[in-house]
Length: 147
Image (cartoon, rainbow, N blue to C red; front, side, top):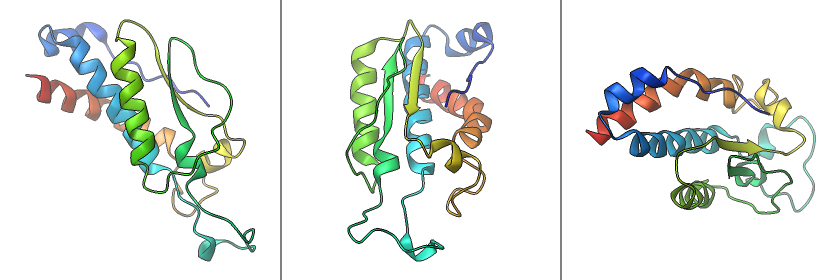
């Protein structure tokens, strides 16, 4: 699942006043945080069918992966109910990647599309689409924090 988060870069650079790299880093982290925290954590009490006996929610949250210039493929076997470990991973990888390229945050689980289109009562409006709508707010916040 990929979505284009684009903005008029000239206007961004003007507003950032030479701090474009810091603004880019803060924005990418804010987008990653949004994706992770908007991701539902399975709550079997809300399901129509019975979950597997050893079911633990948080697998979808743990599968948000950051890639620089290349979207990552594959899946992660981890569980991250709070989302904090996944957000920390995105931040750590972002800090080592630089900003002069394309940043990807992907979730390759097969049910990601279903969750995006309302399969979960915890995220009835989706995850990526909502974050896309909020993208300019994340940029503006990053600019404000960087001044």
